[in-house]
Length: 122
Length: 280
Image (cartoon, rainbow over all chains, first blue to last red):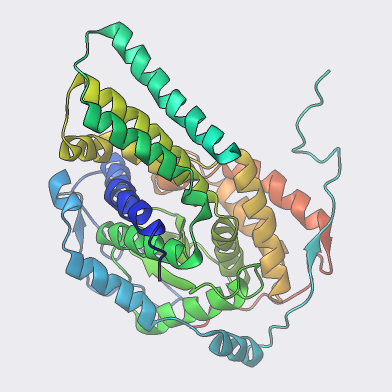
């Protein structure tokens, strides 16, 4: 549980910043066209279909609608995420079934003259 | 004492903004709002120090709002598969015990999002661009790194400071209500804040970590390079990349970073590891 001191911070952030995600999405959507429908924009050939006959119209709601998006549906999305969670044990079993072997890997020091290195300042 | 000094400096910062506005026009200051804003500045200093449960609570709210615009892909086997790969990759990170959740969301924009607390969203367009499971691991690894390193919490902290400054100015200039402020944020200012890129260093770190996590998980880390090279080969004007380039550096720059990471790997090398097909 969140500590009592932290709760006001969370509430303030949720009120002010939480809605930004949705508004950001809208901003992006508006760039590529309002009233866009996302039906089968992708046509999988070998991969499983990500959506079947589902049409979702986005970007038509007013901004106030976004701010007051029903909490119930938002909460339902989070519950859905919880339903699909893979436990650590399940993930390890998945890796075992598919022959993935964990290995100790780290990153060595960056070469001073790597291609993206900033130019030395005088 | 040091903390108090930081707080004082932060308040001075926003008061400085207020002073600037005062020069522009005569202001009727709402002292209550001024104090509220100063308080929020002080609180914002603690954002990066949220406890893990607090981070998860915050992340769930942000994810909920995001999913109201990007609906989840309605395919349970696929979502469970993405969670299996994602959790396996996240187990290789420095925060393996976070409540990691992964999901595909519908959008024709190629992008992936990291939400504080362990939620990673991948758009359906991004999903369709992947050629194998190792590339999926690389994309997930990059986003997992943002969460492990709390990059977005740091951004939120900056945002909270900026917003507190705006609050102060608004209190004097317009006496605007919180609702007005929220509306303006949603209409542009806030969206710009949320969608802006993380700094170059944060993206470079996430690319490097993503390569490491994928390699630790047993995948061929070269998949990270082949994926980003394909992105770089696409035209920048490609409309499906608009969202990606709002939140990430140009793919051509990332090719350089990922290539560098591959050369620095210890314990694995490009070409070693698995390149399994996508297989839900």
